[in-house]
Amino acid sequence: MRTALLADVHSNLEALQACLAHARREGADRFAFLGDLVGYGADPLACLDTIEGLVGEGALAVAGNHDTACLGGHLDTMSLPARDAIYWTRERLGPRQRDFLAGLPLTVAEDDRLFAHASADRPEAWTYITGVREAEQALDATAARIVFVGHVHHPQLYFTTPGGALRAFAPVPGVAMPLSDFRRWLVIVGSAGQPRDGNPAACYALHDAAAGTLTHYRVPYDARAAANKILEAGLPERLAWRLIRGE
Image (cartoon, rainbow, N blue to C red; front, side, top):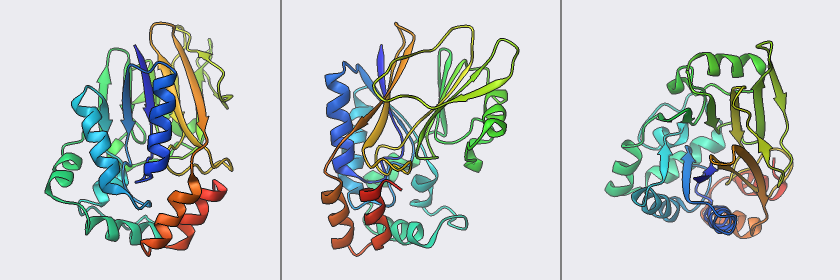
């Protein structure tokens, strides 16, 4: 089974479509969406329609903090541009989209894998995994051998050493990484819809369960078209420019 993992789509239809097409060419059998399907971007309805259709075909999906915020959740920790986008998105969601978002779980466990938006340690707290300490807390909170998350908008891997210590590794796009059965792994898949690592290309990862490998990919897409939609919608300019700059 080859599972394409997409996180932080953030209502970016152009990036979503580019990642889905690329993953299918790479032989993906199914998709997993790791939260923050909406927020920031200008195409929440089209993105949710696409993702909901894939969930109906067997895809996995979990909720992110922007998804819950669009249903009326707290915005206290969000930036002003993020809040503006949440208010804008709330006004456009219909009953079907709200029901879909409301039905998303915080985590999904499958065999030796766990799928979440943020940390497995109190997933409702939306903890950012920005270093070894947070990664250790996430792995300590679950028995899963592999944990897949998003939330921080850049790709990263954490793995256990034979002595039990945790190490970080920056994946190389397009290079398959063997996920040894003798280690535990925490995989941050990067952001499909709003990369923040200085590379504006959309990011997703492909997990090949049979081969025991994980490959991160960067997918160029029409970021300027997505940015123009944000400006035309009257959303904050910063949300448009960060797509162009990947920041």
